Image (cartoon, rainbow, N blue to C red; front, side):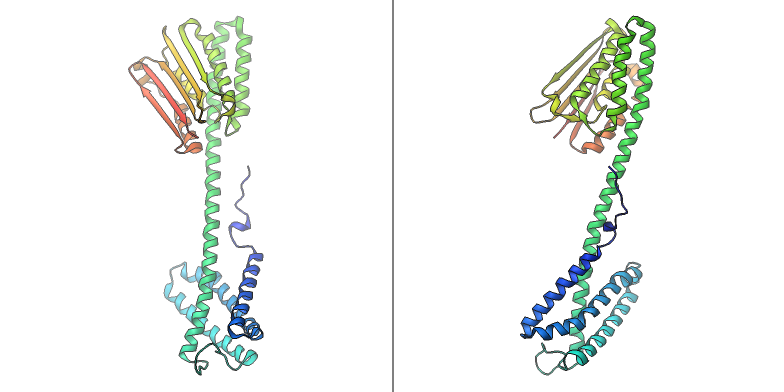
Length: 347
């Protein structure tokens, strides 16, 4: 999926919505004041005079005053310039109304109220502040929503990049181990080399192609584990007891690729190397859709302490964190000679 942050909708409100807002607001004002005065023609004329002033003042405030002064914390300068602009707007609005619309420039006031009085100045400035506050609130709200969307997209890109990196880590790590196994197996069991190569081919095909997806069918992952166990059974002959038990309808479940195989691989990598070595694996899809996995093996304790898990378990845990968040439980149990991993993926 390609994600682009250059889309204009993340940075500004499309022009058509500006026209839509002012058109609706203009119509609303005409109806409102026309109904109030019972004179829709007067309302139309006065709004035609006043709205250009509203619009100019709003956009100067949004795109110049706020970023130039308010954002930079020059509060006193911002207030001074805004008040100056409001007074200028008052003078222009009052003059245009007087010469173009009506001599009675304040018809809604009770009594004989004249222009350029304290009350009239305050009433007009409060009206302009109302428009400024309304539009600024809408703009800041839209910007906040768009910024949240942008941050969500950035987070998604970062998660996808990290997941891709983690998957790329697995491939060379796993290829290195499988090639070593092939070398040992062909030396020790050359008569069954074709079977070994076929199973390794299946595994490597899965790793090359399926690992690119975020999730694969659980049944495919189980088939991969079965091929891997078969190879280990050939390699260890009678020195290891391997069991794998599947429960439930695995075909309907999905899981991140190589999640379970990494734990299985570690069971063999760090397990007991002499007689009596065992690995028991359980994979279950529960009726409520949860996926349960368990891998248990015995090991020599001093060997276990001196060997790290490589990138395996840490890689898997990070991938689980990214893909499931808190919707999984991972328990790693270490006893004297037993090592057990239990993974529960919730719905």
